Image (cartoon, rainbow, N blue to C red; front, side, top):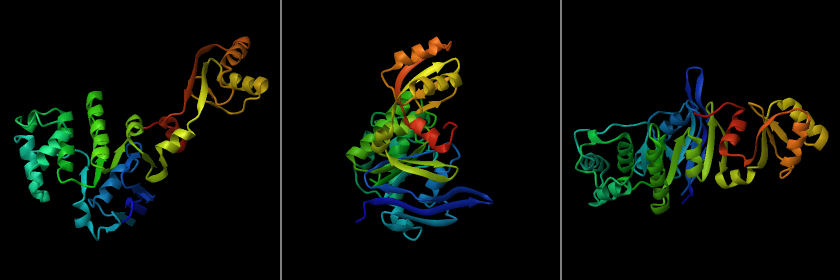
Length: 307
């Protein structure tokens, strides 16, 4: 039995002259929470729709649980739960009634399956309400319940926190962590929200303009993160020249709005500040920080922002 749950090889989807996904090689291991990270329009949803057999690739291959898609699609999809975009519910029915319909369609016979799913998403006390009375966050939680009622081995979530307030985002995050830990599910979660991916994922795949730029574990990413001194100054180019001339500093970056990050000489902010002030440069901020996922992402795609 392979420990690779998802493997794509040169997976490509082309619409006319545009490649929405361009020769993507992705590997998701068993038990991982894999954060599929990219800007809106980067190709995340197109990739997920191909993985779930909702659209056909132009070229390339997909293997899930070691089996080829779409040849073994029917057998594979029975082992997967998913939320792709937001699918509706019967709003005049209760949560339990909605899940009963889904359970029948999935051939779920375990009597406690629906109650188990509702308990996991903390909706067991809300089952007398019609779903039309639910908030967006409650509907998202019900969507997760529906995706796990058949006890899937792989859970695929496309932007599951879209539109939620901070409390709703925190609730969904907790559920995802719980499913991975308590049910040993492999989870693929796509998002353009860097902070969410950073708090959830074991492994990250970064997609940009249809290309997978890198796959990296959070553990490795943290070892790459570097501490730095950040100064906000009135004349960044002059400050940079002074760093090189007086301290021999070459390991620095000049950012936007007068920010300079210095990756050496940590602990010498006093001497550096004195140097700037003596040469007529106003210093409005000094901080000791470290690179975050956002910094890494921006460097990788060559500037810009996510979201």
